[in-house]
Length: 456
Image 1 (cartoon, rainbow, N blue to C red):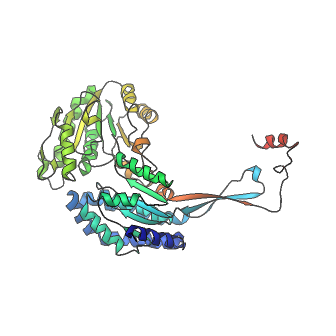
Image 2 (cartoon, rainbow, N blue to C red):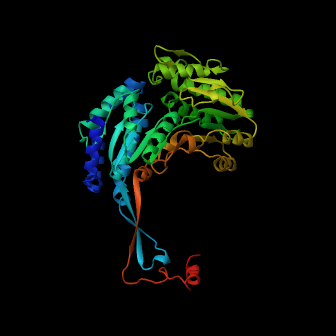
């Protein structure tokens, strides 16, 4: 029997024992996972450094710490979330009581990307465990050191009938996607997301797609341009721009464009030095394929600052580009690297129209001290989520669901939403046998008038 088929069979059999639904079993699993992560912290940091050149600080703040925080929050709340909830009962169902029962889907498949290998592998897993499911996890082969370590952490400490990591290349992913699951959670590119959705449709499997897109960053003429630049540079160059919610392109009011660019350059050099190639905290591009794609994107652009690169070290410097129009290769696909096209604008109405004519972005950032303008942006542009006067940080809150809309994804997670995503909410009506009104039964003659008084 195929190995994947065997794991699936074992997980389905184990799920139907009901053990994974037990709240104490879930809690113990989450606590065990937390202890494992803490004990493997240094090894996780080393693996992330080998794959992406991540510093210990960035590995912890953007990956390990976020996952530990998510575990703590869910452990503290899971008992309450997992209880059946009594809700109101309509008069048409007198006499009865109504409840919503949270229940797990069953076998889940989690496919993780390479850019945040640990966070985007383990955060969905936490949601799956908390809801009472079993899980098969496929880490990205583009982060091989991380993938190998995650296999060790999970497969050496949990039975494969419950949680299991399967490593491999794209062919392994194809085989996995041809199998039947009860829920699929995928994080990655839009193009692969379409494949995942097509495969899921064959079995009518519910899915969450965490994709990406071109997330705009808008800078108004009102406010602290120095602070704005500081936060934009941080968000853009976090993980060297290899972040699905990184500011993809910058829209700046024409009256402050020059001042903002000067401030951007100031903070690039303050954070990473005049030559980031010599900075050990500056993350490398994941591989040669993505490196060459990025070089092609800006090779014929009007470079304001940066533009240096080195294939041997997979290094691309922070690069600012003067973008005269909304057209061209760099505006057609998600950049996913340390390159920032800058477009000037005159009015908010003009850029609202332009953004709305493009695929809905995963994130949007607006910088302004004008609250009315902020509300105008929020209420007139559809996007997954974002921030006013900051970048990226909306992802750090367990109280804010994270996810895209349309081409940037479907479904969301983080905090309680992680539990919700991997949970089916089953509606139950418990009817009394003491009273049985006759109006719903045939014959219906003379009953319509009475029914209309109730159902309106």
